[in-house]
Every structure is written in C-alpha cells, then in structure tokens.
Length: 228
Image (tube, rainbow, N blue to C red; front, side, top):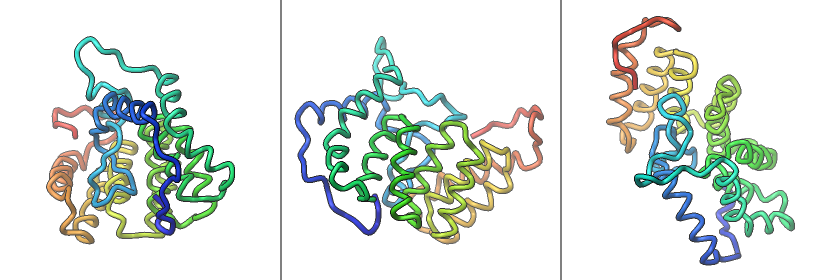
C-alpha cells in the first residue's frame, strides 16, 4: 500500500490461507459498499458497507440460510490470513508497506481496531502516506469515531489535496457523520474538479444531487426526502 515500497511478501499462501481469503470475500459480499480504500487504484475497490446505511455486518454475498460469522470468527480468519506477513514483521518491524498490508487484511475482514493499530505503526514510519491515513480514517469512521476520522482524513488531504478517494470519503464523513450536506457537496465538487475522469464520477454527481436536497435540514429534523 505504501507508495515507496512495492515489495510483495516472500512467502506464498497455502491452500488453507487462500480458502480463508475466499471465505472472507464471500461473506463480505466482495466488500460492495460506499466508502473507498485510500489505496484503491482509481477508486475501484470499495470497502465495507457504509455504517449509516447498513450495519457493518456481512450480509452482502451470503446465500439464504447462511449466518454471518461473529466478530471473533472474522478476527480468527484475518489472523490466519495475515500470519505469514506478521511473521515477516518480526524481522522487519518498521516495514511500512508490510504493516499497511496487514492492516488491509484486518480492514477487509472488518476488524477495524486491529487495522487501525497496524495503520498507526505504518504511519509512524511514513507519516505522509495519504492512502494509509485515508484507510485509517475510514476504519475510525466505521467504529463511530467521526471526529477522529475527520482529523485524520483532513491531514491526509493536507498532504495530498487531490486524493480523490479521500475527498469522496470525507464527503461521506461530513454528511453521514455531521449532517453537513454543504461540506459534503464542496468535497465532491472539488473531487470532480480535480479529477474529471474519476471512475465514479456519475455516482459522485448523484450524491451531490441528493445532498442538495438536504442542505437546509437540521440535525433531528424530519424529512420525506430520500437519503443516500
């Protein structure tokens, strides 16, 4: 994930680890949702479903009669999947790219507390990595830490003002976390200005149109206007 280190793990996945990853992807519904990972190229790798739209559960790719795994089961699967990388960290504890990779695995399994911990360690090594900081902010938002999420994503955008995924997510934070429709619109309009070829431009335009319907709605005020 870190920009300055593109090394890949030296260990290969076993069939068991590959199976665990497949299970995680299936149960997450291939992570179809709203918020975007900072490192997603072109904004094409969305994270888990937005907290205010749907719970941070895993209903997306599951068949009838299947039960979502418990948080403990998800953590156990992420622990198993990330084990080879965590073993490498024993000898390379300050490898920012490796730390971020492990953080991503916990993030994708919705074990956000663990993900944040690894992202913090990665940022201690590379504090200006805007993609990792965007991911950490998004994990914080999923945990309901809206103010912390905004603080971190503001810092990411200070380091990289044109980071499209960070702008997209900050708009979500403002609207869904603070009921700041005007702030969300400003972020999304800036995103389109800075990156007119953004792959999710049509979705951003739809969100702007929706947010404009809510610009004058105050917290707690009832409305019949559709939300996101």
